[in-house]
Length: 161
Image (cartoon, rainbow, N blue to C red; front, side):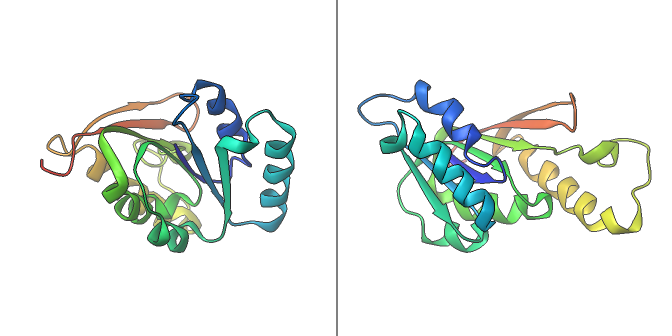
């Protein structure tokens, strides 16, 4: 599993008990110093510290350095960066892998009738581009859950599609 964003390691800790005991591993990326330290603290206090790697840095840079394969990716960082980050990690996602993206409906502006304030126009535009990409039926099977700020669940069909 790869967690990208501001979940302060909580998602990693919630998913850790579900990992395959022999091969399962979680990589989590955090940009903010305070959140990184908090995540490190909570992870180190858990029974799963050996199965979680916590990386610090801008995910758009860190993702260019990752190796290996992932079967689950959770995007929960800067909403305007989702598509860029997905494009960077997609070469490492296994066929049938799942990409979760939080807050994709962003306050009702992305798929709603409300006009976003000027300060949110770029985020809304980029989230619409992200959803257009993951709703491409040749590449993904995607469902968008509208509860709260919305969550997209996309199953990657693979590199040969």
